[in-house]
Length: 182
Ligand SMILES: [Zn+2]
Image 1 (spheres, rainbow, N blue to C red):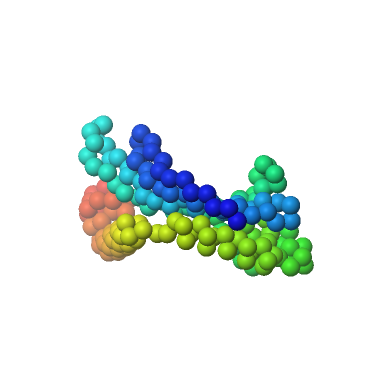
Image 2: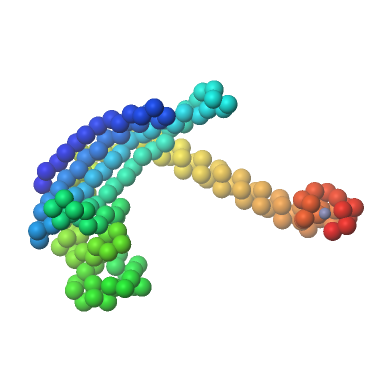
């Protein structure tokens, strides 16, 4: 398996520092390619055009491709269990053929192919590990999401309490004490 590494993409709006590793293998006349693009990008926060700060985002993208020569047949971000796709029109045939997973929309894979893809994922990941910076950012993002969720829950709870109060009008969303006629 070949391993390619390319690094650092920058564009005007966002400062992006990502690393891409990829590997490919030919199986049954088709080429499987796995690409991992990981890093951090800085988004510029502007208010009225004034730069007020930057926000760091985590970028972590795995892609699994199937090629026939140069023609891309299918791609997906993971191998999904075939059991999550019992309604797929080809599910029955795929199970009969011994397939265990699905990549993208139509690429059913047998366990042999699944193992090869997983090995390829290990290769690109080992050459492109999650950095300390990414872990910190990931934790910060998870924390922010949790706080946002808790805020939303608190607001919803407050609104439910408000609606129970006789002076609150649900339609005006204000304390009208019935003056609005609703
Ligand atoms: Zn009202």
